[in-house]
Length: 148
Image 1 (cartoon, rainbow, N blue to C red):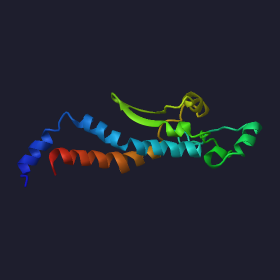
Image 2: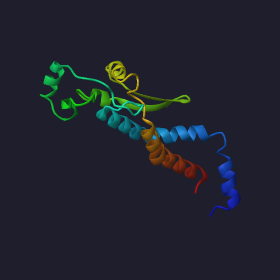
Image 3: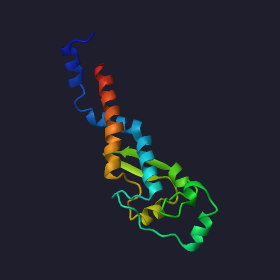
Image 4: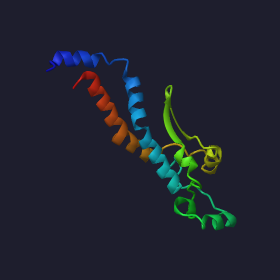
């Protein structure tokens, strides 16, 4: 059993490692961020929280009517088409920055249609991501380091 002094010593040994532990926690939770972005895209919600203003052409609507699922939605912008952009979603830490995007060749087109606000979390999604995912992973990592 650890004494309070041992726990304090292990806790103090974490100084200077906080950022690295936070990065590890984020990496563990990146799929949740990707899922939140996919949900926003499916609803046509920009990172500002506003609906994307976009109208499909009559030809695009006719083509979409032959499809199913998100590919068939014409009431709002989903950016789904073949699903390639959704499958390629990523969230990663690069230095001190967090990057969101897709590996799809359509990234620029999607970003343009959503005024550059396609691949970022809304404030509500950020709060959910941090509260429900990152904080828990960070706490777990700290507990592992101090052996609680």
